[in-house]
Length: 136
Image (cartoon, rainbow, N blue to C red):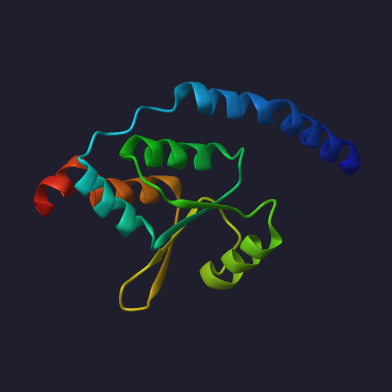
């Protein structure tokens, strides 16, 4: 019985995966407008960030949409398909749970931020319109 349930959910994921990816493409928002200088500063700040994710995870889709809305160029690392990313997530963050934002600080410290809402709040606080106004 257990194996039957396992295959049922694997089949369900195979059917739903394309739906999730198409829905993401159709509903991804336009990015915010910045001057070339502001965008260069944001791109430079994003060099210290990496998002560990699974391609069809709905919570990861939520974070990728926020990244697109904010116009960020954050490296996306698939921890499901690439064993080296999965291992880095397990060793650095302590668990294989996605989405997870790896934040490398200037002082050499590394922070692992889990949960889509926490990641989106951090991104909005760091790169949102209010943060851009405060930087000027």
